[in-house]
Length: 219
Image 1 (cartoon, rainbow, N blue to C red):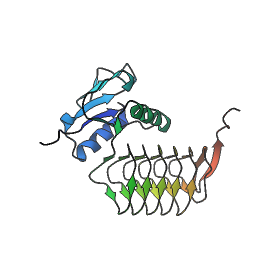
Image 2: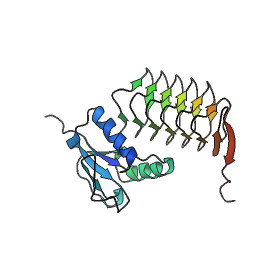
Image 3: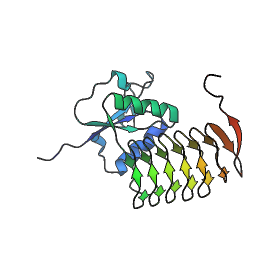
Image 4: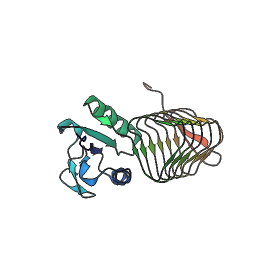
């Protein structure tokens, strides 16, 4: 007996969710197998997006059968909360890879990763859970990207770069070989990173320099 097609619920109903929807279709998921979009914002519930319904958040939904979730929230902290909530509710986050993406030999992609159009991931790179690799970014060989990070459109990582969990790299940022960017760091659009960036800092410019550091927890 043939197995029934997997059903997918997209978490989030904003602009980013539209791109995830397109990536799902490109990867071979049929429109009718996309249940809709789940969103915590009551103002969005009951509307339609890309021809599919916007449903309530996970805490009020009850889905039968083999339903998996696709992560579609751009903000790292919010996406991490929804990822953890989905897992707690027993949903498996599905990894979505656009058909135009190129993934090299020996690469490992975690759960809930989204890889958009024209992304290149070269050999032996490791991508953690719930990561966004946005449109046309490139990850060269032997890079390690921590969970819940977000590489914006057109980001360029040279070989052997390490990106900490929850870090965010803005549109067109570039990182030279072997550099480490700490967890929770934010790299501004167009920045060129040529030296390590500490955790929980914001760095901008060419070359990138730190302009802001978060206060330690409890102070």
